[in-house]
Image 1 (cartoon, rainbow, N blue to C red):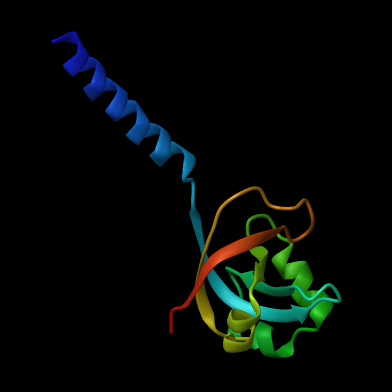
Image 2: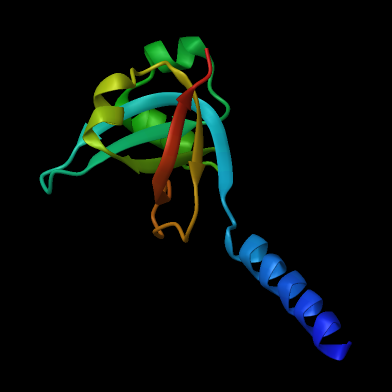
Length: 117
């Protein structure tokens, strides 16, 4: 009888551990820059709060400044196919997990990028 309860409790804790370890997050915003790096990696800069006029009229440095505001922008590493299919100005939802690199704006690997509009 105790073995039955033990197995049930063990199953419950395993499920809890799996859920706790899969701490995926989502981030929504507009793609404001794309960059192909020398090491064959690809970055997209996604900013939460930016107007269409700022996107069109601001320089690259000014866009980075807007993205560097607290919790307003993230750089995402993406694969080549995603990079080629995403355009500046697209509204996207990015699923990611893991720690972000300490930079302004932070960099993190994207698991999934979905165009919203």
